[in-house]
Image 1 (cartoon, rainbow, N blue to C red):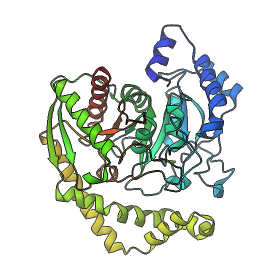
Image 2 (cartoon, rainbow, N blue to C red; image 1 turned 60 degrees about the vertical axis):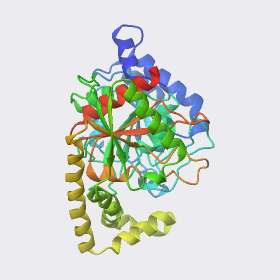
Image 3 (cartoon, one colour; image 1 turned 45 degrees about the vertical axis):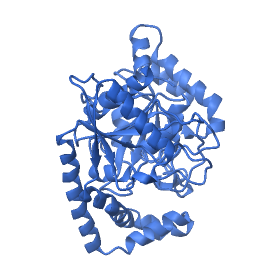
Length: 417
C-alpha cells in the first residue's frame, strides 16, 4: 500500500517528486484496476501529472480517489447509478475542494454502490476477488488496499467507511459528525451521512485528515496507559467466532502492553438508539430522494425503491419519536467515556463474506453513526484464511485525535506482538 506519510517524507527529502508520485499511482491503476474495478472514471493522465508538478501544499504528491457520491467539477458524478450517467456538476463538493487546496491530486472517482446504499457494486476485494470489498465505499477501500491511491474519501450512513476498511484491511476513519462538511455529497439521510477517509494505517489517515481539515489530528503516543472498554452490545452474538477471537487477542495484546481493559455492558438507551437508526434513515431518504424516486423509481434497484417507499410511509410523529431516542442515545454515548478513553467493538460481524451478492452487515456500525462518535478501523489482524479482521476504536464525540491515536497504538502493539 502507499503511505501518505512516506510520500511526504520522500518528497521532503528529495527522493521523489509530486509528479513522480502521481505517475506511480496512475501506473498502478492502469496495471490493476481492470481486475478490481475500483474506479468509475479517471483523470486525464498527462493533465494530472502536469498539475502535480506545480502543486503546493502539505499533500502535494498524494494521490486521492473520490467516492462517486461527491460532486466534482472536472469529472462526471454518477452517484453509482446509470440514472446520472454523464452528469457534470459545476462545482466541487466541499471536501473535494478542501483536498485540492491541501495540494493533493484527485486521480479519479471511485465506485460506490447505487446512491451509496446496499445494492452491491462491481468492485472486488483486492485481497481475494471472490469476497466482497464491503460497501458503500467499496471502490475507495479497494483502491487504497491495492496500492492504487494513497488516500480516498468515503461516506457512512450505516457502516460504509468502517466496514469496507475492515474487509479490505485498511484504515477507515469516520470523524465526529459534521467535523467534515457533507455539502456537495448526494444526500441520503442528513442526520446520519458522515464524510470519512481511507488510508494505509491509522497514522496515515490521521495525517491525511489533519492536512485536509487543518486540525491537529496527527497521532500521538498516549501520555498514560490507555483505558479501553470492551463494549458488549446486545448484538454481541452476531459477531462470528473469528471476530470474537480477534477482540480477545486485541484485549490480551493491549493488556500485555500496559493498557487497562474493562468490559462495558450496553446501556438500554444506546440499544434503543441502534434500533431507531432505520426509522431516521428511511424517513429522511424518503424526503431527500423523493424527486429521484418520483422521476426514476422504476429504474432503481428493488431494495432502494422499497426503502424509499417505506420511508415515505413513516408518519412524522414516528420520526420525531426516533429523533428523541437518538438524542438520549448520544448523551448515553458521552457517558461511556467517564471511565475509559476509548471503547473497542467489532468493525463488522467478521471477515469479508465470500461472494459479491451482499456488501455485508453494518449492524456493529449503526449506533456509532447515529451518535456521531469518531471511529477508526484497526488493521493488523486476520483470520485463519488470511483475510483481514477489523476491530473498531470509538472515542468521545469530538475526541477524534484520541480515537486515531488509540488506533495507531493498537496497530503498533499488534504488529510487535
